[in-house]
Length: 349
Ligand code: HPA
Ligand code: ZN
Image (cartoon, rainbow, N blue to C red; front, top):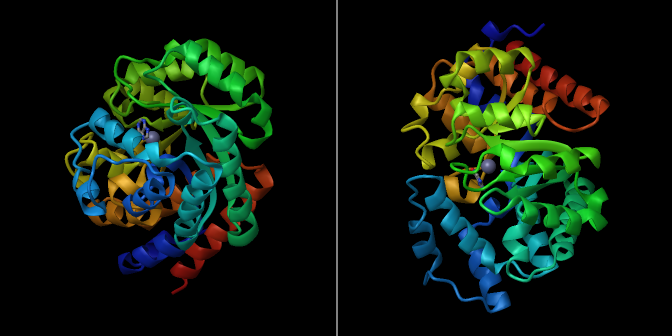
């Protein structure tokens, strides 16, 4: 039993920073910092539309999801070789280790790269090597989730899945990202059915900008195991009840939601309401290089802005990150035991 009331609020930032945690919603292309974009552009002879790192960073003022995606895809244009994908993911893992991320499930967007003539094997091999090194050198268990771009057709998603099959053992699941509005989950019913038949895990972005109906069709048609974002579920009390009853995880990304104007300010975020309703929500960074912070930045800023979040909610979020992961049950239990010890120590003074 953890005595949450015995943990003073002043202890929360250190506890959040040092406690073990899992990251389940990070687009690895969204971890590409401007400095690395410029380094790779030079290495590969790719011309950029921005004259400097500062000019590029200054362009990170978004009004909605699409305004971000336009810059995000431009940034990814410097990725050409296996070592580029390795360098990008390795840089992320080093930052994740500093945040005590012990398990990470990384989204990647193969179509962003194959459209530029990059072989899908180049993408997957580079990312996979970084995952292996993260495990060996940083003790982070890491897996890959292949995302389909929902603004493209289902046929293109099917072709992408088929092209990735020689690397089937290098990724654990499929997801759905990019422009949500006008591209409902059911557009991808066949490719998700195929992925499930292959034994892949299935997740989808839904209810970030799209309506609660998109969350429902992700559940009913795609049969997803997690909803990415999902924050608009609170517009439908029946849906919130359903999500709570089934412990359906929501991979919430607070800084992303503010940068993309889903919420005006962190203090208006509905994370406290999601937890209050009993949902299996946790905090993630989404695209940390673009949204102003990695996982601990998201946690610390969110707790700073929302007084309703205290030690009990901190524990729930971190525990949910392990519960919702696709790691084996015995690894989850080990991480949860470590998490318990961190909170018990804080409560003991
Ligand atoms: N939403 C949809 N697609 C994305 C995102 C996001 O937050 N980040 C990268 N691709
Ligand atoms: Zn995302």
